[in-house]
Length: 497
Image (cartoon, rainbow, N blue to C red; front, side, top):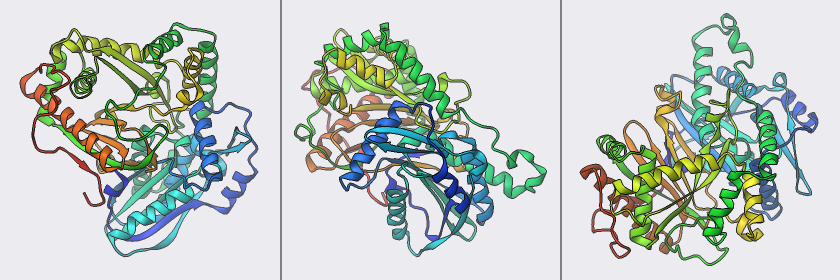
């Protein structure tokens, strides 16, 4: 599985087959009453924002997607059955949202009402026809204000086919997309290898993953507890006060004015190969930390050497599935965020900085127990303005794909994960590790100035981690150090790259 730009996933052309709810299923979706259960904060916020964007005539790009390749001729009926069983297993994928006067309610279909069937959509004659076809489907079909809130399909050729899935962010996150097609491919494989009547498990919705509404109820309960006051919410406030009540930003000026955004472009950087990963990991452990602590330390060094920052201040993403029983393979937006803060002063080398990065990561893990709604309320109580609170932070995500359940299966290994490409003012980083490579992907403003700045920064970060992997440590330079001349490692992602 690789996180990349959508245009970099280039399946061969063929017959496009779409899978849609049957007429019976659509009728059931329309008739499904609203749930009395709570909706998660992130889903509410996203659905409201999407409604405002649609009212203003803007295209919906708030989705995540994935694609992979399957060997063998397509069995359309079996793939439709596999999708049906997959959606029955995951409560959030049976959900659509309604937004009236900023009030978001959810409608949940019964598993028995879920049924998808496939039919030929059109012929895609060339590879250049595929990407516009996907974009059109994703833009039109992924809003979650109607069922299903996702687009699924296949591109069939003799001897093999591609499958793809794009979901509204209210229904999905990066881990969900990394899990989804692998699970569908497993169900499909079982259905096509055997007579489904010989395997009762394929005729039911079991095993059912952790439920979205149970998660939302637990989040609401936790939010109320933290709103009443907790050490973690006070720590959030203290951190934000130390940083002028501002969300973390990219350390270098990207050339945009206050409130200004630009169309996204992608940057991808290969940081380390397999031997480099082993050596970098050894350097982190020798200094008393873990691999991810080394990532934070390397970024803090880049911020120090290029921007002169004496303190690292970032916002990181946590996958909440690991903390919940039954949610390891659940579909849904199961994430939280937490600030990471530590001082670079007092450390003269990478190894000396590792203990501070390690302690900061552990503090962030504790702060991540505060649900987003309670964290934002705490920031507001500390004095942040509404504009400061709603400003999207510059994010850092670290994913180790080696630990996903599908890592040994072809559908997972061949997979690509991507997002909708709208507008941004940030240069958030997704740093990912698998068995062979550590790499970084970033969605940055697509202006010449921003691209130049981001390339310089990511090239320098690559230099830092390769220095550490090669020598086992690295001295921290001053603000004037800057990157040494060398081959450019960051390349603007483009179709066919």
